[in-house]
Amino acid sequence: MRIAEIIGRVTLSRCHPSLRGATWKVVVPLDRQGLAGKESGRGEPFIIFDELGAGEGSLVGVSEGAEATAPFHPNVKPIDGYAAAILDQVEIG
Image (cartoon, rainbow, N blue to C red; front, side):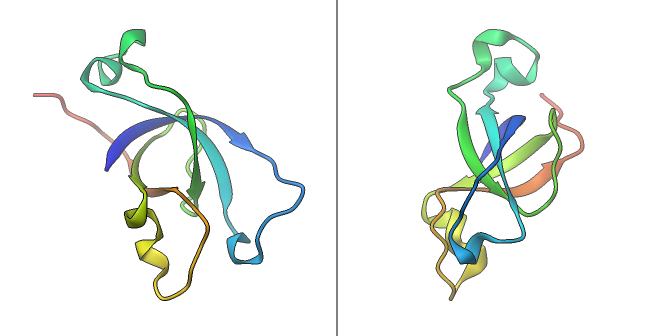
């Protein structure tokens, strides 16, 4: 799981029927420097599936790959990234 910041959303004209009821968000993964507010700690943006309703600027825990589809088992959803949690606070030790 990675921590990412939501920077936007995606609007679809059509989608797979199994994906109704959620939104697609554009996120940027953050490393330790990114969490401290430095631009150099931000990765390449990618798209995630969000059922939690996280807003722009929110920090989320992102599951990717096979782990992203695990919450929907036994149903199959064609996703590669999933917002598993909205993070209220992140402490860097």
